Amino acid sequence: MNPPQAHNSTILLVDDNPTNLQLLFGTLKGLGHKLLVAKSGEDALKVAQWAQPDLILLDILMTGIDGFETCTRLKENPETRDIAVIFLSALDDIDDKIKGLSMGAVDYIAKPFQAEEVIARVGTHLTIARLRIELAERNRQLEAANQPILDSVGDGIYGLDLDGNITFANPAAIQLTGYPKEALIGHSLHELHLYARWDGSPYHFIETGIYQTLKQGIAKQSDGDVFWRHTGDHFAASWTCTPITRASEVQGAVLAFRDITQRKRQEHQLRDALAEVERLRDRLQAENAYLQAEVRNEGRFDSIVGESPTLKEVLNQVDQVAPTNSSVLIIGESGTGKEAIARAIHDLSPRRDRPLIKVNCGAITPTLIESELFGHEKGAFTGASRQRQGHFELADGGTIFLDEVGELPLDAQVKLLRVLQEHEISRLGSETSIKVDVRVIAATNRDLVAMVEEGNFRMDLFYRLNVFPLTVPPLRDRREDIPLLVTKFLSDQARAQGRSFSRVSEDGMQLLLSYHWPGNIRELQNVIERAAILARDQVVPIAPHLVHSGINAAPELVNQPQPMPELPDRFISLAENEARYIRHVLQHTDWTIAGKGGAAEILDLPASTLRSRMKKLGVDRHD
Image (cartoon, rainbow, N blue to C red; front, side, top):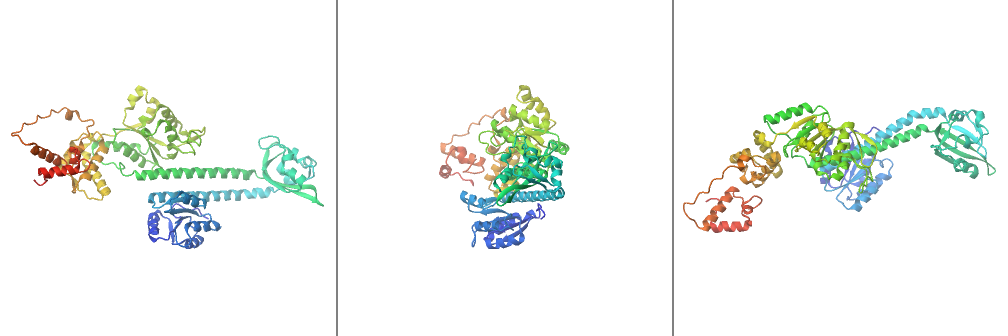
């Protein structure tokens, strides 16, 4: 049987609801797999019998036999019991999940499902199935290759008397043990071959199954002993000892044995290979969980927009450094798009097919940084109930992006430096080193040189990271890119809100171009999102209060002299003055009364109260 390939596996979809089948079929149809459908448990058993799919997605609540019964029958049939089954059901109770998994299912997905989750889990279990089949085939080939060796050597055969002395030895026994025939006949099997275990510790004859055969007349066998040779070395032995009886009395025994060293090595290789499969499965699951989180976070700064000379210079440097394996340090203010630059470097590098693992160093508590970056063993600390791979291990072969690297404590900086120097990590609680091939891209909005001088950042780590520094310009230094960014963010909001926006107003664009943007691209995106929410037409107005954060105002704006208020030409009533002020605020908010940024919020009034005052004072938009 050939192992299932990534794009030609067969998947059987089982559900008695045509709508669910159509939805599931649509989710998986673009992945290159062969998809079969069954509308009942009975049909599923028949299709699985003749089609032998690699994976079955099985609903539970069906007419006729339900999913649980269907799974039970699949596992009882020798021809279908090895097919991986994933339950996909609206039953979300923990008892139902336990019941499904105890029947032999490999996974349980609750409805309504997320398409990305189904795709990720299907991919994981198809990969595991492929690895297991490849492993079985590899073991079969190893056994087939070594079988002629075992056949040519043959079994050694001894005849034994009641005291365990050798009375007969065939040529194979002489060849296997290296003893000449005269050194075997009449000598104790225990003294020649079974005086010690693997580690050299004494092995008393009374403990052996051979002794029990001679004393009790019961056939025994074992493949857990070693036979010592004449030369002083030993081999793993599989033996069978059969009593020789006469008139119900034990007269001796026949001992057949063979060298199974090669088989023991194969078993060891198989255990190692299975451990590797488990490690790969854990890694796949961890990568899938990470990639699902990436899908959920997609769409914020995944593209780089702009045509300004300063941005083009940065992108030119990205083109130059991306094909290399050099460490990159991205420097820039918060919100300038450092993560988007890191993504561009990774996507243009030879590592693009491996993951880009992003780590926010400032968001991890100091006590968990080492565990997050390098992983931990089960029991390494309180709460470590299972082994966990760290971010560096997940990024093996790919790229790790250390955002806010200046927030790393000094002890974590030492361990990071070791990874950069020796390209290996050690999980917390383990003394074993793991080789990793990871490219490091770091980013910071802090002055690392000043931190080095203050003793808060290691100088040797700084020079390891600062191989190729990239400075991302703030938005105020690339104002010509603002219209392009506004167009992109407005398009994003139109798609998110299901509306149609053509542009921002002319005066609004002037406000955006003249603002100093302390929060950079991220602040601009937030302003456009708020303006789009408040907009009533396709042309989006930008109210002045939306582009005033009060943070890092430019000195020329802060120090400008404020004009003296003009004295009124005539005195007016309080009611007229109130009406004027309400009208002024409403014009400022483009006559938006309620909601965030509305006139009611600015005047600190309930919206209903403001409407009542407007009616009483005769304030109307069409005046």
